[in-house]
Image (cartoon, rainbow, N blue to C red; front, side, top):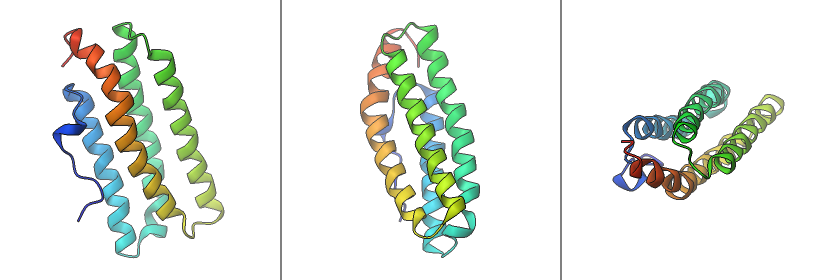
Length: 135
């Protein structure tokens, strides 16, 4: 069973963003599967780097849309993105020093971030963008 399963509650009604969120959920589920198979330590660094790269790409998509449509919470949302990138980079740094036990912490962090960030923060900008005609 997957740690996270896409459902309509995660939808921000912007196809491009929803597709990216689905991909991020799949990456978290890949980490969980690797841990269950005892491969967590072997693949964690690869997943972390892919996650950092993909998250940066995803955040630039969100920020481009927020900026293009003058979303009033843009600066705050962008700061949240920067904080998340720093946190994931710190996980990566710690992994390189000592991978033992880090996979579980990362998995818990990612699950919490995805559910809280999408369901709260992303829903705020998406309502604004949806009202501007972005879908």
